[in-house]
Length: 84
Image (cartoon, rainbow, N blue to C red; front, side, top):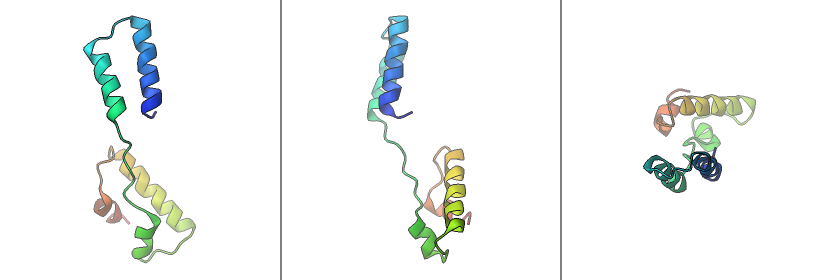
């Protein structure tokens, strides 16, 4: 959702319940300090492994990004590249 939308939804939820409890405060603090994870693999990484630019590279990057998302963003660059 992104931090801004998450905070807006949390505020709407709070307005509906009228209770600024610890859970609400924790959600807002988390959202304000959260940074989106950056996908650790780029086309340059695939080029370095001998892959040619084009549709196949785009599909490979898409598969790797899906695997990264499925892992809850835990797979690092080396683990992802080993999947090629």
